[in-house]
Amino acid sequence: MITNMEKIKTLLEEKGIKPTFQRLKILEYLSNNLNNHPTVEMVYEKLLNDIPTLSLTTVYNTLNNFLEKRLVFGVTITGTEVRYDFNTDYHHHFLCKKCGQIIDIDLKCAYAEGEKGIISGHRIDEIHGYFKGICKDCSKNVGKKSRGRSSS
Ligand SMILES: [Zn+2]
Ligand SMILES: [Zn+2]
Image (cartoon, rainbow, N blue to C red; front, top):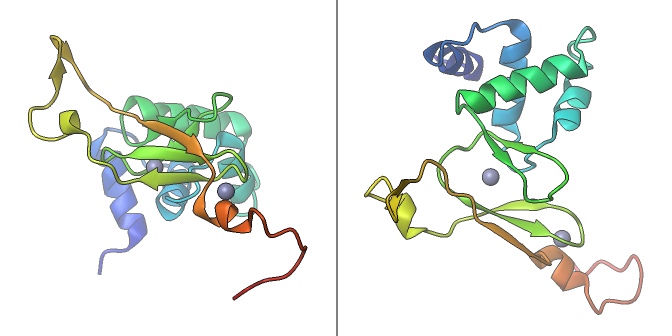
């Protein structure tokens, strides 16, 4: 049986990154949290319980290294911070302006398929589409003026 941790270790080794305990834990955290696209601080705070010796700088440097090696993507949809994404298949992101959730959008982009995109002679390596609005959960709550009444 191949554990998740072994898969993570292989991923690091394939990219020529030495699989130290901290790097393994950081990449494992990202792989387990595909939906929340965490920031450096979020990763740091979550892992501090497991690794009391961890420093914010280490997390920052490690994530930067992962970015350079294209193990993760950086999502800058909020404009103020980098959110890290373990899912490096082409996909786009939706930011809810109300609750701040970043949601994966499954929208096919013609250039992401096939061709290995050349646009006007430029070689495209990454495609990031950013959409902003109000998510479906927040939309449901619009107009519901009464507090604390759940309708489930
Ligand atoms: Zn929302
Ligand atoms: Zn994503």
